[in-house]
Image (cartoon, rainbow over the protein chains, first blue to last red):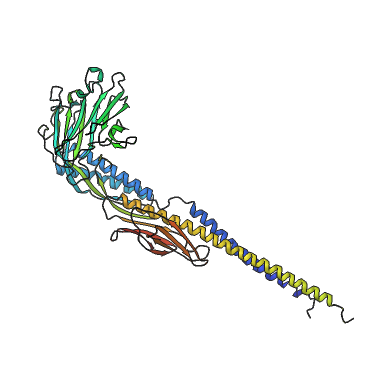
Length: 344
Length: 147
């Protein structure tokens, strides 16, 4: 029989129980730790940095796009244009490489390749010219700039169609007794049969000089008008971006209420012709790039002195290889650059 | 006189029995509680890891779609816990049901996270730890690999 008076042998069960509970508590502590770590993991943001890669990609596309625009504008030969694009892309690559390396990443832009040559139609004059055959108010006001414009293997036939318009001595208001058909318009009609016409007219409001009207007419005769307040004396209408002075214009884009697309060349199949009507009622400069070498009977082959409309070869699109590397991401992709292309 | 001290023995036995019962109950209840918590924590952790892997897949999908030609290189590497609440686990992509399936062995818990991407993902499976989501330009699909 146990010696009930022996103090050393008592309390074993309590001891064992305490030990078992201690083990249980340790296990519980580990599990709580795991739960806390889970919360930590759950509350982390996008740590891999994919948004940084996409932002850098967009920046590269934009910057190389600016190089392409400038090269097309300031160089006349194919070799010069490519040299200019390659020089500025090289500089861009070196600059962003240096910036990126401070954050422990690597970013590189390759030399552009896969050039697609098209043509650029433009009138550049510091004083601006009339949108007529010779840039003068006396020139032919209703005229065809180019014919047989087509995609030539690209997704779109025309990109970066921009009209830089001046108000003073420029676009006439409707108080000048002009009928709608007498307002300045850009007209696109297809060369095939049946003949279809897309037209966009531009004018200034009769009473409010700051209001600019843009009205689009689809091949079926449906029209859509937008009115934008433009205080500036000079502003840009981008037909391919669908903006007036950088403000979106439904008459040059998608109208949700009627579910109709009114944008550049809507409903017109390629090949098509591009014409101006009443070019003597508007003043400024314009330019657009097409993906092929269209025919022209009116444009000069090179920029002349004064406001002369001309057409030269141009880079329509090019590719650069873009590499973005950081601790979590390794991303290399070809980026196609065609600045001002619709839905780009 | 021979019956003297019996009550002390009975009292001792009763005390011992009651103490054993109480202690066993406490230990069993504590053990069950810990086991339940562990299963719950594993389920939560697998679910969080599943969401993160889904976010990596979606991110890789966005990067693949942002490339204008068909053969981009996309690798996203992330460090996930090697174990969840002390047990190993496995991450599998199940393209037929548009799911990511995460399974732990001890305790056995299965969690599915659904994810739909434009770039398809292939049937692949990895252990927990450092996980890579890659774009395989041969098969034109996303996959997971161990780093």
